[in-house]
Amino acid sequence: MASRREEIVEPAGPPPPERRWWLWLLLLLVVVIGGLVAWWLLTRGDDKTTVPDVIGLRSQAAAARIHDHDLDVLPRTGQSNRPPDVVFAQKPGAGTQLDDGQTVTIFISSGRLAVPDVVGLPLKDAQQQLEAKGFKSEVKRVASSKPKGIVVDQAPVAGVTAVRGTAVKLSVSSGEKPVIVPQVVGQTQGSAVSTLTKLKLKPILRNVPSSKPVGIVVAQKPAAGKEVDPGSKVTLNVSTGSPSTTTVATTTTTATTATVTTTAARARVPRVTGLAQTPALRRLNSLGFRPTVTYVPSARPANRVVSQRPAPGTSLRRGALVRVNVSTGPNPQAPVTVPNVVGQDQATAANNLRAAGFRVVVLNRPTRDQSKNGLVVDEQPKAGSSIPRGSQVTIFIGRFS
Image 1 (tube, rainbow, N blue to C red):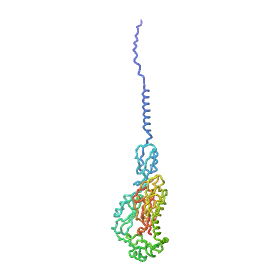
Image 2 (image 1 turned 120 degrees about the vertical axis):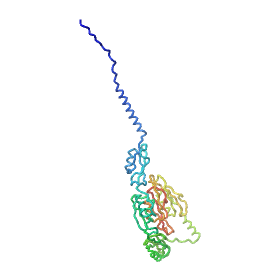
Image 3 (image 1 turned 45 degrees about the vertical axis):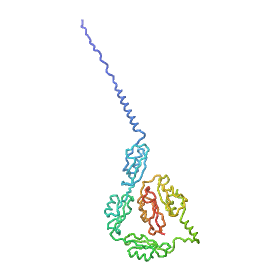
Image 4 (image 1 turned 30 degrees about the vertical axis):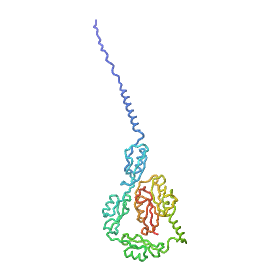
């Protein structure tokens, strides 16, 4: 009988753990999506944008970069050592967070610099200072009581702004003794010519209408007392013996004469509000008033008179001040200080004002002081005023009568 085989059956083990890798994948996906949503919410934050750095860029490139960041641009012009049309400052600064559509002000170099004061310095020192500031120099030797080699005058004058590389004209003492212009007004033509010739000056004669006797010198330029080089020209106005205006018939009674005089000494202030500055000042000046100009912020067009004081129709003595407020316009340029040109001749004053960045208008003003004939007797706005670059400065030239 065959032996019985026993089969030993081992008990089955626990089932293998179930793989749940998909749960981890799902959790990772949720974390990634949550992070993306958080990033979107943070970066979206109220439509914020960052101000870019535009210093050193040309104005157009700077404006384009700011616009690319959804910001507006407000350009301003100012003095800087940077070349013209290059941004030298910005407000607010780079990195500032702004809302879309807010404005960034950029300051664009005009390329203009303030001319240093070198009068009284030795020529070498003056040239070194000018060169250090970016200017060139032109030298003219003149007779002067100053020691030889000392700068006695400069043009443009100190404080005027000019483009880098501008040549500043230096009048340098030659050590030669100057000639002092004598007073010849009131002398006869022959006597005046003889006096000037003896001093090695060159008289230039000009006949003018005058109530003075024929042949009498009624004005001279340069004025008496001025130091000039030997051989300099002196212009003499010589009377032709006939007045320039028609004589008004006199009244027969003292009372009538007094009334006429009183009336002529006063005038009514005209309405100039709403006019452009030049015709407004010309109208006031022609009536014998002294207009004073103040630039004020206004949305009215630039150079337009926006108010006046006293009011139109007010009766004032001739020579009285009438104040006019002139609009700077809606987008004025950076302010610049008006240089002092009173006492200068017309050409020099106009050149200095234009070099400072202003437009120049010239009006004549009668004067009884012959020494002021042909010179600036007033400027408006007055020297030292801070007004937008490109604004009008009116100079009043004395006309001896």
